[in-house]
Length: 289
Figure 1 (cartoon, rainbow, N blue to C red):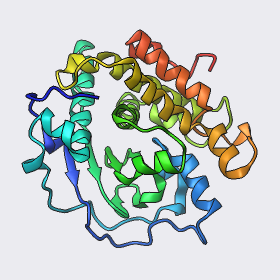
Figure 2: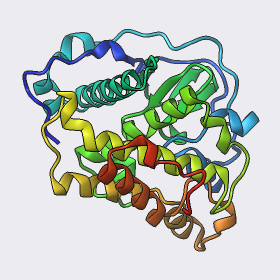
Figure 3: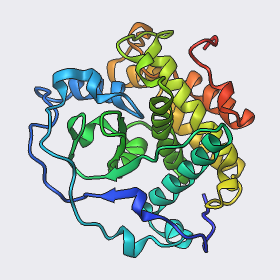
Figure 4: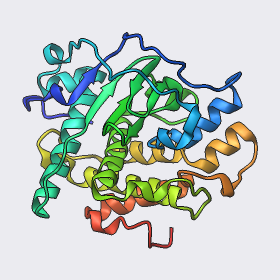
């Protein structure tokens, strides 16, 4: 992925709390192992932490910390050079698209801040460990991301990686923000299974990510996407399919426990969004998924 080198970035949309220590118990999972994997399966790429009840310990206050992003991430050239600046660029692009999309529909978009952290972070949904993967918290309307996840995506889940794999993750989380703003996010709570509302919620977020990809160059931050870059996003989507994760870590596939959808489903709905470029084509709640 190449960012337009002279395009100014807005690092104010990203809060950097890396290295900050937070109180609380973090993930209350005895022994880790399979328990942590099950949390990853649920939360990876956008599960709602509040649905897990006592798994997350209620935190004490919002994240606070200093950031160097304001000094280090000023243009697209910085995004091409540094991973944290690249996240800033993706956040800027995704939010520019949705701001314009809402405006065309006569609505006002409410921005969501992205918080990048290490180890654990205090959120409106509780104190979260890095083991939960990227997620969106509807309580404070923020996206949370540990950059180490992208390495895990390759080493633990077998993804090929690449810049647009990162863009896909960011766009997926903001897809949940769009669902929150439009009243659709709660639709997926508490119903698992291959055709359940949880899976449909996640697949819609994948579709919204594809819609952004269709219009990414139009936001001014990115150069036109290549076929290889789209393949990076599709590969990342497949890597975090419920069936693939279950087979890898549990040795069997159990569709009744799915929360995000199969690899094929995730790739399909990202592709629908990318090819159509219209959020209206992302109605996974009524479609045959």
